[in-house]
Length: 130
Image (tube, rainbow, N blue to C red; front, side, top):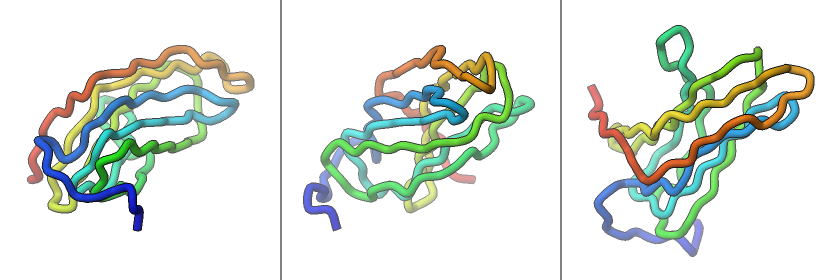
């Protein structure tokens, strides 16, 4: 267990400080910070593909924590162009929330350069489970 994390009552299950992505060689690196977490099962990174959101990968959440937690996820770049991503946070009870969307542009596969990131305030769009 993590001694720096303990249960606390707050309005939202997770306070997201930032979520951004950048290109490093042939990979996209996603990083995000949470200020606290309550009942947080996991995060999923989704990519907009053909007008539908598809799963890129998932990272286990801390669960309950009142300290800042940093997360990192890497994925291989498959082609050039602008890609759109969002972060999905899923509680243990099945409720989930989406972050704002970020855009990442890759201009060339061989020597990809960082182009654009967008950080955002703590805004989750509530989505109830089906």
